[in-house]
Image (tube, rainbow, N blue to C red; front, side, top):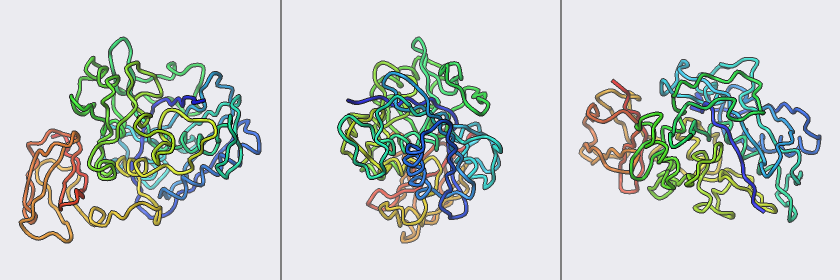
Length: 382
């Protein structure tokens, strides 16, 4: 039996400065001791993956959600904080804290995670649930992934799609332990990378609008972050965008049919099977976390990104002229600028400053070499 994850969508994440594995602090509300062990185990997995000098605060509520819902996560969030890579853009507070290097939300949790007390849970940590049981470590790992920033601000009502119009009333009777932010029709950093295969990036569409609504239910939505594309053979990761919009599921998960059970990227799809367990986010999820701003702790187990890791572009965000340092290249080597749909929109020669002033505001990938390696930069609004 496959059940659905639900996930409201609030602010999102970005990147830390000092290399240190994260400390994830879990506060339990009504959680049985045996369940606490499994949930804390999931928190430890994320803590070993991410870098942060600020504690990540998770509030877990053991709650009768009813029906087939396994969990619901509400991320706290911040925007326009000191050091934010993108202005007028929401970041999950855990990531915002990590970027800023200081706690921006003292006294508040970074996420509220509701887990269904009525589910037949497997509470062990060995990933061996029996038939008919849902693995609690897997589900807790999934929900915390949303709270860390695998989440957007999409909504669709009567054909009108929107980013940043979510309200707490949309998820009644559930509430958050922190004040619901005034989202002001602004996107989350996760949304910046969502692109419809035909009509392009969601953040470039009228908001709210029918074009945005069509893209959210057109089955052709992809996450086109440069590191995700590099990890996925040059293509964006297909997202869950069925013809009927499902609040909390659509546009905030990988596509189920593209990443079915047994696929290494199955953790962040919208459904979970009984008897199945996955205790690792998978390469595309980890690449996505980096695209939205997280740094990964050393020795996480990703493929070596040597060329891209050594690349440096500045200023970033950039208004007109981009400077590039790419070890291993020779003067005159060709550089390509690729947009969120995968189109080449500019070229240059290594050793010369790149003029990007004619590009539309947005996120681009500067591609170099024959293997498709690249480094992300942001063309800022003038």
